Image (cartoon, rainbow, N blue to C red; front, side, top):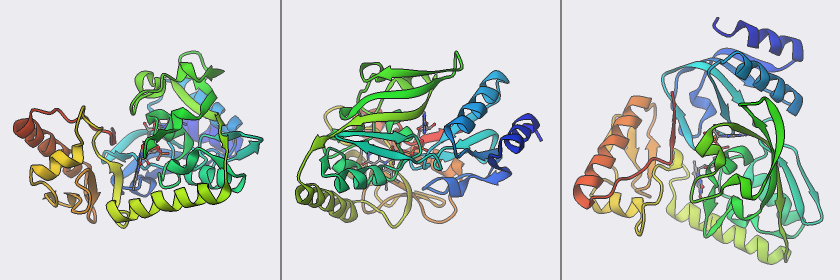
Length: 300
Ligand SMILES: Cc1cc2nc3c(=O)[nH]c(=O)nc-3n(C[C@H](O)[C@H](O)[C@H](O)COP(=O)(O)OP(=O)(O)OC[C@H]3O[C@@H](n4cnc5c(N)ncnc54)[C@H](O)[C@@H]3O)c2cc1C
């Protein structure tokens, strides 16, 4: 086994792990075969010890939240660190602190419970806080970056845990300091929410959820929108106009319900997803002169 040192660290520190684990079940699109080692830390201390070990030993590794924005190559020859068991959330006044593995849905529901407004948009996004911060998850005109005050992060280059301010997150359209540098792992974030009215917040959540059910293929395996929004138009609009709705390559297909979603019809492989993405990009460029950029992340 390639990562004996990490497995023995896990044995010593009581971290759950699996050697040669299947990766498809770790993602919402269900694509991937095996990874050398998959770890499930349950405490911040465990996560930081693992991060120290993989960075110090230059081991190939990947941080995974809920796996709703990515898909794996066939056999990933590295360590996958799954954060979803680090899911603590606390609320104090209008401040919410959430660990990286806390789901957006839970954060949104806890905010509702405390009549705090702001996270209504996040209720239907199936990711966790770390993944949301990585990409500045957004919907219906709001983004997670609108509410972040500061975050505790692990800085890979120094092995230190530091607090970064809201400004240092460099929040942009589907981009942040995390996606730009790949030098940080989000451990915990502090959100500032707004006092609101319970019924209004609840109605807004229900309205957004209804819209998602109407327009998104939520009954199919996907990783959400496959492409970032191009300037002045929508990827889904162009894909639809190009006649690609329903187009498939093996088990990878463009959703017939929402052309921006690539779905796995049953057992799509990474190469089928890659081939479909390439085909869509080529067609859209030839027909409209627009270069689409992937939002969905390929882990290789
Ligand atoms: C049906 C559906 C609907 C969706 N709707 C939306 C939507 O409306 N808006 C939207 O923005 N997205 C949407 N998504 C995409 C996805 O849910 C979001 O991008 C989400 O924020 C990803 O979170 P995750 O935990 O699943 O991240 P993952 O897929 O696990 O990871 C995504 C990236 O974040 C990195 N990452 C994860 N955790 C950390 C961490 N702790 N520190 C540093 N980096 C980390 C990973 O390394 C990876 O590069 C949708 C997806 C689906 C399947």
